Image 1 (tube, rainbow, N blue to C red):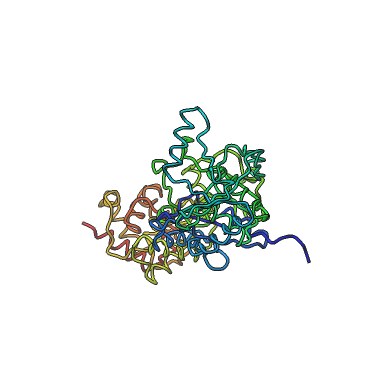
Image 2: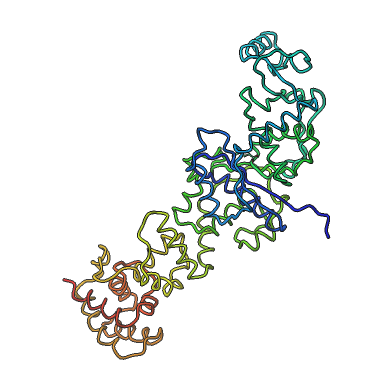
Length: 468
Ligand code: GLU
C-alpha cells in the first residue's frame, strides 16, 4: 500500500448565469491534475449569494462542464446547504479562542475608520471586542482572531512563496450577525471537509488565500497545496471582456468548436509543455503538471483557436464528428440530421474534414450531401452554368453511364470531355461544382461524385443542364 494521499481537486464556481472561460480553464486544470493521478475531481457550487443562485445559473455550470467533457466525482455539493456546518466550525473556533464575538455596530466601525483616516492611521478595523470577556446581550458577528504580528506565507506552486504582513489583514468575519457564514469561511470549511488536497484556481483569489490559510492554521487542519493561475487576458493584454471575443464557454460550443479542441486550447492558456501546441487529451493527461503553469497572464487568441480546431477536426473519427454536429444543431436550435443526411455526412467526411475550421464549416462543405434536388444554385453557380457548359454537362450524362465508378475512370471521362471541347479540366470544374453542389466552392468534383454515386451525379448534371 502506498501512503501517498489521494489527490482531490475541485471546481468551486459561483453561479453567475454562464460559465466563464476562466472557470472552464480552472475546471480543466483541476480535472487534468486529478484524473492523471487517479485522484478525484469534485464540484462545489458556491451558491451562498441567494439572489444569483438560481437553478438556471447552476444548470449553466453543469452544462459547461458536460459540454467540455469534464466529469466530476460524486454529487455536486451546494455550499449554501452546508451553512449549519460552517456555523458549527465558527463556534468551535470561538470555543478554542481562535475567534471572538464582536458587537461593534456598522456606525461604530465607520466612526473608527473616519477617525483613523483623520489621524493618518491604517483604516483596518481593530475591534475593541477582541479580548473582551464581558459581553452585552446584543447582536454580534464572529470574527477570526487573526495574528497581528508576523507574516502569513502562501506556499504557492505557481507564484512561489507569497508573504503577507499580518498587520495588513483584519480580523475577518466568519459568521454574520444573522448566523450566515461568510464566503471566506465557508470555502475553508468546505475544502477541508471535502478533503481537497490541491486548490488550483484563478490568482484573483491569491489575497483570499492568505486569510484562508489563517483559518486552516486556527483549526489545525492541513493546508491544501495552493496553485493560483494568472488570469486570461484579451489579445491586447487587457483584462478579458466581451470586446475581445466570447467570454462564455458555451459561446464556443455555439460557434461549433469541438470540445476536444476547446480542451486543447484552454490547456494552453497559461500552461505549456515545451513547444507543444496541438495535443490529444491523452497527451494533456500525461504532461499536465503545476510547474508548467506560467506566471504571466495568458492571452485569448482566436487565430490559435482556429488552428487547434482544424487539427482536432482533421484527426477526429468521422462518426464522432457527425455525432458532434448533431449536438451542435440541437444546441443552436436547428433541425437535427435526418438518417440520410447522417449517413451522407459520414460517407463524405473524409473529404470535408481537412482544413475545416468548425462544425458548421463541415456542414457548409457537406452541403452537397445534405441538400436534395432541386438545387438552389447561388449566383456564381448560375453564372458558371452558361449555355456552353450546360451542353457539356448534357453530353457527360451519357458518357458517365457505362464506365466503372472509380476515381481513375471518372478522371478519364472528365478529362476527355474537356479535351474534346478544347478546354483544360479546370474550365470544366466550375460548372461541375455548380451542378453537383449548387456552388462554385465545394470539395473536389471527384470526391463529390464518388460520395453521391452515379445515379445522383447524373441526375444533378441533368438538372443543371436543363437550367434555362
Ligand atoms: N467561487 C469562486 C469563484 O467563482 C471560486 C472560489 C475558489 O475557487 O476558492 O470565483
